[in-house]
Length: 402
Ligand code: ATP
Image (tube, rainbow, N blue to C red; front, side, top):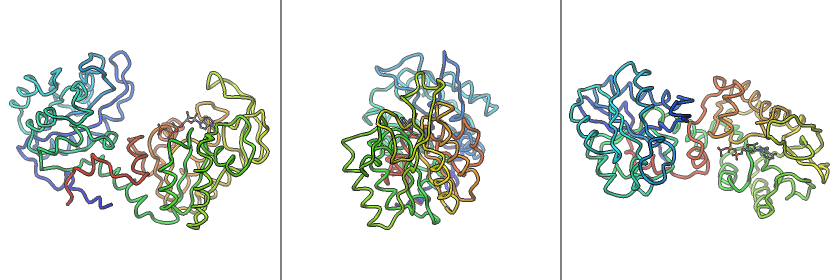
């Protein structure tokens, strides 16, 4: 995988109209943005293009509108917040058809360094199917296309891929470049020892990740709900723990693969069990810690145990590169968050390059206060997982190589 993409540092946008695909898919509650991390993450690229004298036309999706335009998925609040963060006007082109009269007029009136935000790209039904004429309409607004929406790069949509059929001058933004550098280099050319830690609920969600990472890493650590299917595949009693009986053979295969490749596949040696899943999820819960081969038939494993915390932390200590995806237990519950916290702490303490692959583990690391101790926290859950599977992401593939 050669990921030597043209970046915003390599192009000259002075006086040019630049269409930038950003990820402004922010959480909204009653029209108010509850977390503006994604807007902040896009600022370096936007500021760079403004400083270079480009005419910056931004586009993004927001939420999942089903049947075209819906007021609650309007990007209007994002335009306001972005304007505050940039300290300059952002013209919001409010067209239900995204590229309509307002957008065309706003773009025609732009001066160098101006910013226009288009309406939610998913207001057009073609968007998620990557169909015309939306791709060519989007492309008609600009001369240069910059992709900076890593969280959407695993989808071939009009605004992430189709548009490049018509605009040949392409580049990645700083956010994309950072994701590619960390996730790409970590997996393809890691500084060794390379330790990968996987957790989360289900084995089935991460079949290809497990298989690909086994080939790339030196040590693969498995915790969280998915560990119990591996333990059962070893013939252990797992009680009421989360198990996918259809994946027992797969787990055996992976354990054989690890042995054949001479890789360490590390599973929990003890586990925190309770009478059942907490209800509600953060309710007080009575737990005990048992060895992994002594899980009582009437108990459910909900977190790794203390010996496993130490074992995993030890494996991380000697690592030079660590990639982590998925919590070690039901971290939403304070009693069952200890394993996830222990792993976050181990990563915070190591000198290794530490990369958190999106989704729940990123949320856990941020929520637990370890965000600034990590080398990189991916902004894309699904996209980072597909990256770890070794897949080529369409939104990266369409951007020109250097
Ligand atoms: P995303 O797919 O969004 O990136 P993720 O990969 O980080 O998320 P998921 O596979 O979604 O993680 O799993 C996270 C969920 O797994 C959490 O809600 C957590 O409570 C649950 N979980 C972790 N360990 C267990 C367990 N032992 N039993 C049941 N559920 C568990």
